[in-house]
Image (cartoon, rainbow, N blue to C red; front, side, top):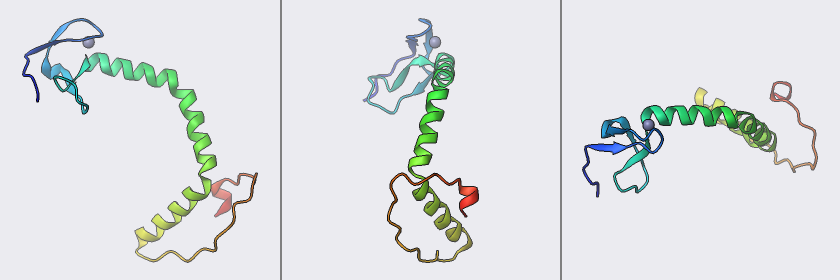
Length: 108
Ligand SMILES: [Zn+2]
């Protein structure tokens, strides 16, 4: 149930703005809108991205290292799907502990 309101006060800049200045929130908030107005939300997200950029980059690199084999299989399968052929059957390879990382451009 949405409560119909005309104006809402932004929690960031403390200004009263019309509801079309707020994005709709997917969760079950009372009015179905975010607490930050659109310009404040954009600024907040931009700052957050800048602050977390390096950490996130490291996380992505780590994930790519850990899921190297899965990613490779996925890429091969999607290539064959794109050209409309069945991918060749692969032998099951037992994972070798501490296997050295081979970049995908050298491994194909
Ligand atoms: Zn605001």
